[in-house]
Image 1 (cartoon, rainbow, N blue to C red):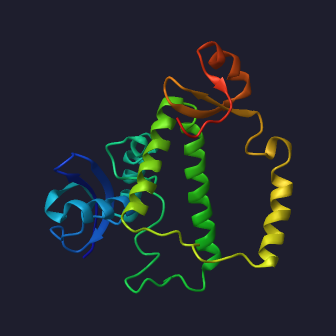
Image 2: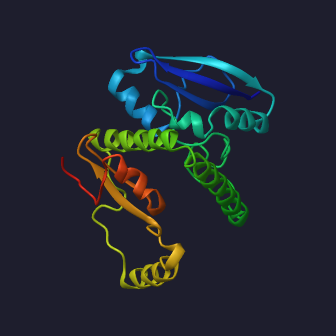
Length: 225
């Protein structure tokens, strides 16, 4: 009989942690997690440098999803001492089986709808996170570090060596021309500023410019210090 658990992985070298959920018929199995950054860390340090603890045994998948969502929230993934980069609770255990095939064949509409709702929920939480500048900057730094680690250990851009067809280019151009007008433009109401003292370049809202200028920042974008 399968059991559902919420577990914690700890790197005994640097004390970084990872929280995940797992479906198993053997509580003492050797599963450590599927997180992309966690996997890279395991390759770097070795499995013997990680220990797993079971935090909760759940009665159902729904309960496991709920608990993971409560723990692995936007604050948790923003922390620099965690390996998690995805919000908890989204997705299930059985969408992809051991053969890596979609076991819900014939129900693609429902699957896509569920994935879309999960993505919308994640976007909403990230937008809430942006309200706290310090926390959001920590989150961005964590994602940046994760990407650098990914490429450092041989990760590759999935689109590398490929090109869009002329038809795709036309569609992307048309959509961009619609969505990037006025307030739909991702740069609308913002500007770049930099500080030689802190050796930083950041993007801010234009209505905040005067405050930053008064504190020694300079309008413009500087990449090399």
